[in-house]
Image (cartoon, rainbow, N blue to C red; front, side, top):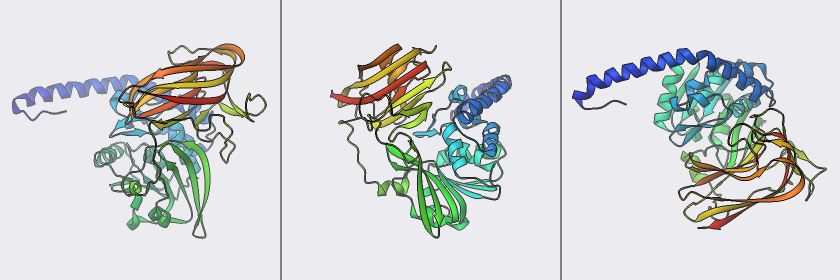
Length: 408
């Protein structure tokens, strides 16, 4: 940052130049490391998790994700996780970027509209598999920074503007494909109108904590809808906010589908998102018809699923968790949180407030009941619950997961 005090200007310029030079040297030293990390990201988090389109995979190999995250996050750029990028926004998980891009069925002749430029990463990936990308960002500072970044990195077929994505870009419509990287509760009609006949739209659709990645295809003027995966994205703001009807109770929290009986259209588990190395087990459930099973052979590799909800930490002082589990040769990973069971993280408008392991499962055991209690930071406003092996190895079956809030 620069100072407005004239007598500091020379000193600041000198310091800034030294920092830039140091940063350039650091980049030169780590470019090969970034390349290796990006290749590992594609092979471990994309190919192994089912991404098949070779053009999408090649685009994910080519786009330097570390250029699209804050410098403080660069070491984590090639993790399969969302990262904070400022303005209460995040950069989307690499798997989800690849999955959404693949679901569009991108063609070299396509013109694509993106709603939610963010840092520009999704637009950059799209630019390598389609003819043109138009991208709209509602946050001016984020949009302007992304535009400069995309230009600097040479993505010449991306056009950006600042505005409310709900309205689309009518003067440049119609579009072959439309993608949203923020979640509306209802499908914006202007975007439907700007989608070509036969076109596809992919978006996270639903309320704040209950969303599904959704594929819409326009046939004879009507939309055919297919829900693909449970997910969670930042909410769409602007005009979309005025159409929201679902309200949340941040005090009387509960786990949704904790018995794993509700399913998605593609036989996944409803209400739980990012289901990695997880499957339904319909033969060993201690209650109901099904439980979930996690299995992992590589220490540190993710095998989990998540659920998020709002919370008012000023009114909820603790969370009591209960579940049933069966363990088979579970061994903790090398890192502190690479432990099987149930973990919870606390957030305040996307800022991490802390993590806790509520229930730890290890070794080998038949079905048993386990319980755990964690304190809630007073300024927490969201929680993310993570169940599974979480980087540990072995096999874990879970059922009847429940949550009881304890008033402060």
